Image (cartoon, rainbow, N blue to C red; front, side, top):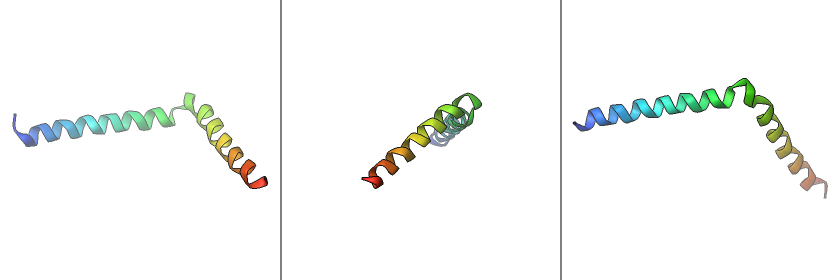
Length: 51
């Protein structure tokens, strides 16, 4: 197996994994969970500035 073929295979696998992560992050079932996490981070930040 030559190096360019191995690099192509690794690139293809990485691209498929990247697409899987993007799909997971934007899937409708995860939206509410991520919005809750995002809002909690903003609430933590505002708590620090009030003190």
